[in-house]
Length: 328
Image (cartoon, rainbow, N blue to C red; front, side, top):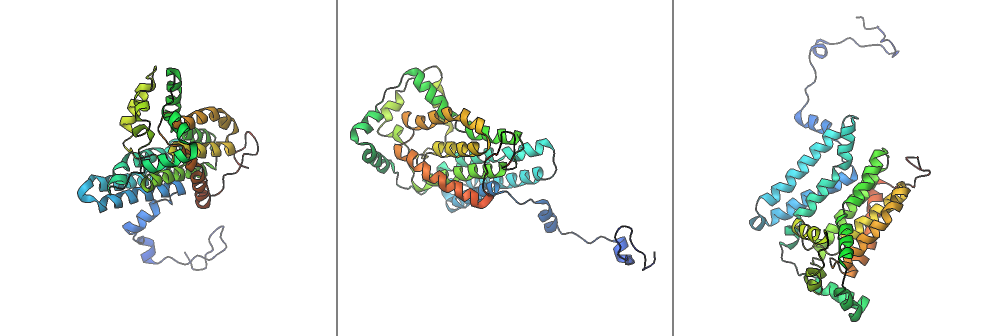
């Protein structure tokens, strides 16, 4: 091949190949290969990865009390999650898409189930007395006492317990519905939900408390009617929720409000369908003695803060312009 040869379709002369370039490829370092493979995490994914690393650092600070498992566990979860992001980021196969869009939920649950010991490891003062005092100021002693001793029929306790237990189902329903439509704004919705979960978890560190069911309403909670399924569900929830000091703010309220706000912008039909369940869920947090009134009230501004933090990180979630559009 002569030096003046012009490559077809380029219009540029092609330089002759040297012996080195024709026989050898430039070596690629292991680090270059890792950087090429690793995707850039989305805001929701990055926030969850940061949360896992922070959990590991807190556990490392208290290694003698918590043991090495509390350090290695979150790190292993972060590595596994990063590997899953890399696996699902490449290619357009449906299973990759669904796995990546749904993957934040098991990580969120993992974080919740493993922060309980971290919250209490420094033996912080428990704030139930302060929260109960704030409720007394808001409601008055008579209304607070009436609420702490309110009697529920068996069917009412069942209905409220079912609503309370649907906590994860509401945001999951929103994500699945948007994923089914391949909504391009789904990563922004996931960012809102992940940020909201994490802000509520941060509140457990700032204001650790156990809730009315362990104090002013302990007798009422213990004597709630079992009904057909309510008693069994509450028993299982009490065993499953290993993070006990998870009262302020009400994460149930925060995440439900965030999911409703996202659905209102992207899925009006689902938004209307979820409203009754969401109202029952928020009411159940107080009527079943899981939360103080102030926990639910504080959830509103904190949800707004999480919403705008996610908006800064991921972008605005637009309103759907018509029933079948994916964007506005």
